[in-house]
Each structure stands twice: as structure tokens, then as C-alpha cells.
Image (tube, rainbow, N blue to C red; front, side, top):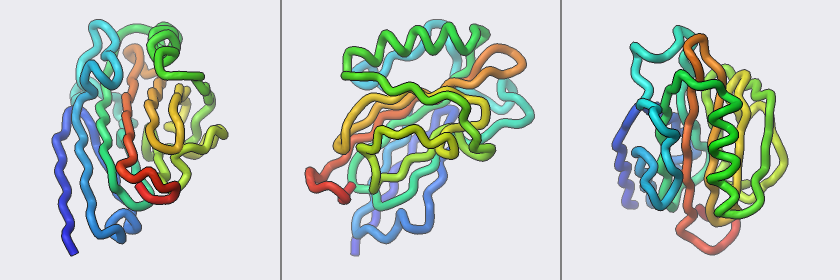
Length: 172
């Protein structure tokens, strides 16, 4: 059984559920999104311990087997959450219909992804960081996600791109 875990962290914390290692091959790349995934909001900076609120939460949590790629990064901006959401509403339209979910309730993570239900279009407030709004576009093969939450100094936002390697539903 071969297991490989590649991590490149940029202002991002990743949680892997115990089930994540059940798959024969585990490949995860966590890095700043590139121009072919999601643009970074102008004048935003990668989140650091200094820039983050005391109540800082982890960036991404993944539940389920991993057979594909994940890019994720968390940034901070002095701009309002609504201004950042407006920017990403427009940017995500290039990829399809945008789903918006407000009122996140998860106190531990900005974005929680269950790879078994990647194409699920229902809003699950428990999968979104406390007080955050999530914008999502994609299907059961790939997703682009932006979670934005207001902070005492502006806003914090997490950009996530997930691409399933297998074309079979239920296999990441």
C-alpha cells in the first residue's frame, strides 16, 4: 500500500480526518491558488499568526478518501467581507452557477469538505466557519470554494480548489 502526502503550506492549516488515510493513495497539495484556479483578492496578504484574530480557526478540513488535488490558502484583507464577496461572486461566475451559503457555524475550520459528497449543492452551515459566507461552484468532479468572514481588522478568506482524479462518483 503506497501512501504519499505532499503539503506546501501558505497561511493555511489542514485537518485530515482519520478516514482520509483509508484510501490506498493519499495525495494532497496545499498551496496558494494559482491563476488557473482562483484569483487572489487585490492587496490581500497570506494569513499569519500576527495578522489573524485571537479566535483564529483552521483553514480546511477534509473528510473522506483523497485521490485528487487540493489547493488552499487563507488570506487577510482590511476590506469588508461584502466587498471581498462581491469580487469572488464575479470571479466564480466564469466557472458556472455560484451557490452562496451564509451563516456558517463551524468554530474550528473555515471550510470543511467531505470528498464523498463533493457534488452536493445544499448549504451545510456546519461545514462553513463561524460567521462566514461561502461561495461555491463546481460539480462532483471539481469544486472552487471561497469562504469569507469578517474580522476585527477587516476580513479573512480561504480559497479552495478541489479536483477529483477518479471519474467514478464516490472515489476521490
